[in-house]
Amino acid sequence: MLLDVALPLSLAFIMFSLGYGLTFADFGRVLSMPRAVLTGMALQVLAVPLVAYLALMVVELPPAMAFGVMILAFCPGGVTSNILTKLGGGTVALSITLTAVVSLLSVITLPVFAGWAAEAFLGDLAVDIDVTSIGISMFALTAAPALIGLLVRFVATDFAERTEGRVSAIAMVLFVVIVVAALATNWDMFISNVGQLGPMLVGINIVLLIAGVLIARAVGLGGPDGICISIEMGVQNAALGITVAGLIAGQGGIPEFAVPAAVYGITMYLVTLPGLFVLKAVFGKT
Image (cartoon, rainbow, N blue to C red; front, top):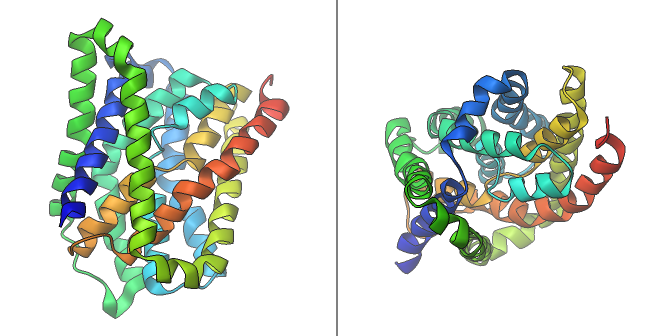
């Protein structure tokens, strides 16, 4: 099936575009701004799944949908979070660093956490998740393309700077195609659950945006750092969530596990875009 080839290749290009916008110095900032980076990492890796889990304790969804929400929550920040951070007056350097580091870290964390979530939410219907296999597949589809993009930028810096905008634009188009394909493939399930799923995902997004900036302030980080962390928490890599759902299901096409990621791929911008201007007005200068 064409989709089985196009989906992973599209994700690989999206991750290549992420690496294409990075430099080795972005990883070095882990040492130069450790408190901000470690806070952002902890909140993305642990707090985002916790918020999603608590939401699922309140809103009852079909098991497959609930599992899909958790898959989404285990994903790192989206590739557009850097642009949104700049628009919101956040610390762009921190955003780039968090996106890069957490994306690489997710190769390990996402398969492990997904194994737990399958048991917790699918019960007897749980799919057998080969953590090692999923991790290897994720490395091939996410970390490897990002590293290739990073190396290309290092070797041909001038060329990369001239073409970065076009590469990012192609990646955005591919992201939209992935989201549309996921919704179209599972349209009946989407329609039957959108009344509960949509508001819950919007609620999760709002909570993440608020929690990110408040927790950052509580640990002594400035307003721009808090805005960055808030956006990194609220913007998830929905394309990765859709692809991982397919890897876990082990079937052709896009499974029902992917529906929450596809919906969130739309709603997160509807929530975050106006939200970041509120954050900028309230916390931008503090």
